Length: 151
Ligand code: NI
Image 1 (cartoon, helix red, strand yellow):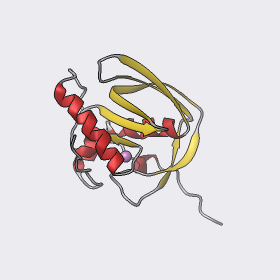
Image 2 (tube, protein in one colour):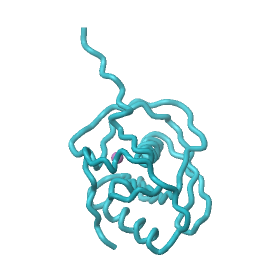
Image 3 (tube, helix red, strand yellow):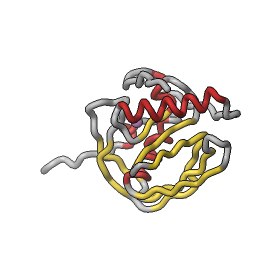
Image 4 (cartoon, helix red, strand yellow):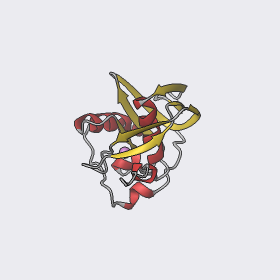
C-alpha cells in the first residue's frame, strides 16, 4: 500500500466530472487500498478518487470502524435534512455548514463487483453525500448554507 498525495483546493482536477469504472482491475483494487491508507493517514473519514488526482467514480468512507468502498456509487434514496459543519481533506482548515439529507442510501459496487446498498444516517449520510459530490466536481463550499447576518 502507498500513501497518495491529496490534491488541494485550487487544482482544477477537483472540478472535473469523473468517469465510471468499467472493470474492477487489480489497479482499481490497489487504488482502493491506497485511498483508505491515505484517508487514515490524513485523519479523514472520507476520500474520493479525484482528491488523489484520479478521475474515476470511486470513493472510500470510514466511520465507526467500518470501511465503505464505493465504486460507481449513486444515491438511490434520501430523506430528512441536516445542517451541520463539515470539512474536506482538500480544503484544510476550512469548515462550512452545509445542508444535507439526514438519511441517504447509496448503491455501489464493492471490490468484488457485487452490488451493495448502504444506508447512512447523520454523519455517515453526510460523508456519502460529500464524497459523491467530489465525483461530479462539487465541493462542500458549493453547498454552504448562508450564514445569517446579525441585526
Ligand atoms: Ni472532500
